[in-house]
Image 1 (cartoon, one colour):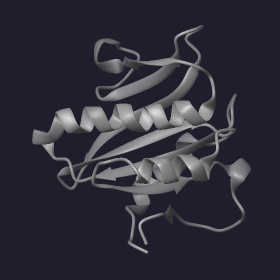
Image 2 (image 1 turned 135 degrees about the horizontal axis):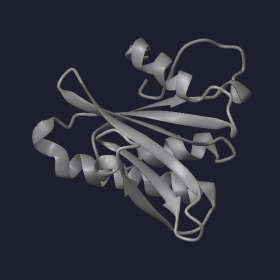
Image 3 (image 1 turned 60 degrees about the vertical axis):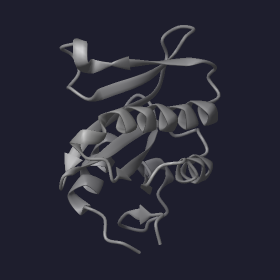
Image 4 (image 1 turned 180 degrees about the horizontal axis):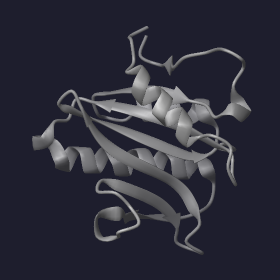
Length: 147
């Protein structure tokens, strides 16, 4: 198993801590640098579509935080067309010269199926599954799926 940035993993886990809804997440490690923003954007949309398909909430659209002071730059949400309900949220982060994208979404979506479908996307990706406290089996550390 490859070593994953433990700081990023722990920061992602912190986003999943108990709140109004139970959440799971993914860290999508890309090979995209600053010159690959179009590929990063398309991959973000593709991963969001995978999550939305498994969430079963109907059609979604992406709301980007670039024009909203309540969100950070490169922060995006997948919302339902009907009712603007939360489906997923992500943040695109530059780490060591390439982008990692942290996604989180409601925990009732099938985590294993989401990870498998994201890994099957036509892009150079490594996926780390991050389970919220409600789904943890007592083991510690990241479940890096690139082994």
